[in-house]
Image 1 (cartoon, rainbow, N blue to C red):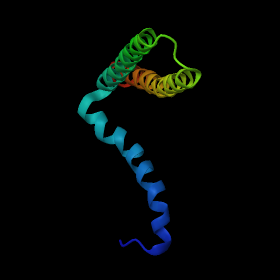
Image 2 (cartoon, one colour):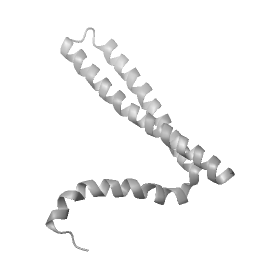
Image 3 (cartoon, rainbow, N blue to C red):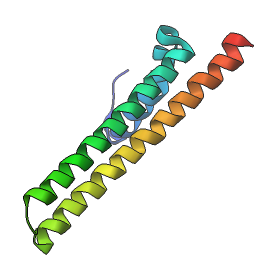
Image 4 (cartoon, rainbow, N blue to C red):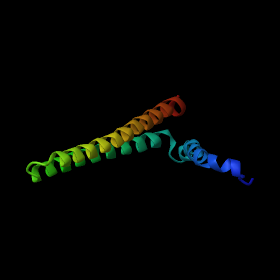
Length: 111
């Protein structure tokens, strides 16, 4: 099957949907439901570790710089908000994988 010109603009939409749809089909036989829960746990622990590490780094910068200017403070605050948003998404994905993994294990493996 060759892609014609009208189908090419849809390619950026189709490829991520294809990967999202195929990911569970490929990973589930390899790791089972408890493996998916374990992956979710690892993602969650990594997100918490990065959050704690960055908070300590932020505090060190504040102590090292006597009184940051308003612009520096705004830049650092914006950087922290951006990082926290990304970590929030990672934690949501982590919780979802843990729930799917444990729920799938209880429903299909145990029951």
